[in-house]
Image (cartoon, rainbow, N blue to C red; front, side, top):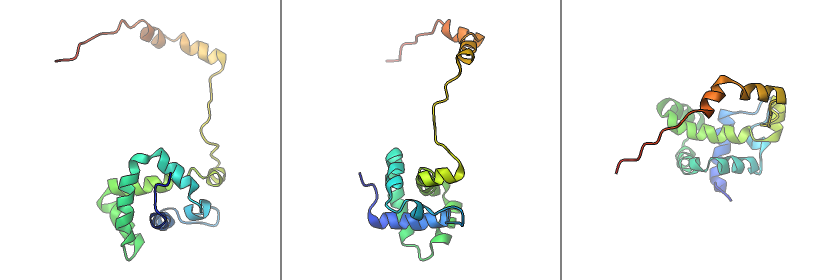
Length: 141
C-alpha cells in the first residue's frame, strides 16, 4: 500500500531534514530509510493522519524556504505541525538502525515472576474489583 506519491515523499524527506537533520552520529530519515519502507509502516500504523499529512505536504511543497515555513507552522498552528512531526518522528524511530543507535530494543513482553503475580492477585484492590456487584442502567429511549 503506497500512501504517498514520490513528490509527497520527497517533500516529507526535505521536512524531515529540517526536523531531524543528519548528524555525525545519526542519519537523517532520508538516509536511514531511502526506500521509504519504515515511512510506509508508520503511515500504515497511523492511517488516520495520511489525509491531513498530504494536505500539509501540498502546502509546504510550495514554500520558497522550507525551514521558516516549518517554524511558522509550528508557531501558528500546532495541530497541523503535529501531523507532520508525528509522521516524521514515527517513521524515524521505527528504523532498526536508528533504534540501535539510541539503544532502544523495541517493545517486548515483560511478564512478572510467579511470586510477583501471586502478590498482585492477592491485593485488596483486586479483591474489591472481583467482588464489585456491578450496576445496570438501561439506556434512555
